[in-house]
Amino acid sequence: SGLCERKTHRKDIAMSLEIKKILYATDLSKNSIFAFRYAVDLADKYGAKITILYVLEALSATGVTVLSAYLGPEHLLENVEERRGHIKERIGQRLQAYLEKVPRESPRLDASQVDVVISEGYPAEQILEQADKLECDMIVMGTHGKGFLQQTFLGSVAKRVLRRAHKPITIVPLPSSASASNLDEI
Image 1 (cartoon, one colour):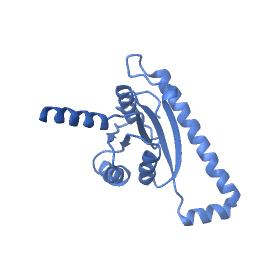
Image 2 (cartoon, rainbow, N blue to C red):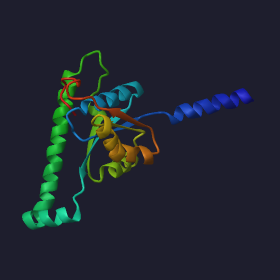
Image 3 (tube, rainbow, N blue to C red):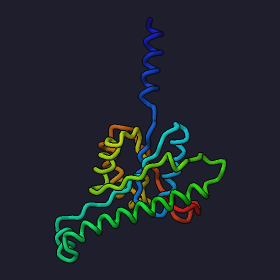
């Protein structure tokens, strides 16, 4: 009876580790392709889909007031939508470049396995909210810098996500641009 219970327990654990959807959070920095490769490798390993998330940082109340006064309230909304479209286009171009340049022996990714979401707000909160809303099983994101700067960044967005997430997270330290691949970033 004890052996049956252990096998059932292991099966439950294995089922709880099933990864069908990965949220890849990007800031579109130059070296973010490095973290994307981890997301692709994990998606290949688990047969998962990837959702690429970019967060437009929320403007402060002062910023909204100044831009509204300068642009007018109706143009402020148009500007935000224009930025969303531009970012989605950049992500699409980078994804296409990645798909064209990735070596044949590398884990493959089909464009149908990728969704792009652009949200607005505070990055850490949006990453967590979108991961839940989109029913992602895992989060992959990168960090910047070296030494003190890396600790500072990890102390902000990545650390906040790590502290509050209730699902697996892979935080990938991004290499310096000199050691990064020549593939276009995503």
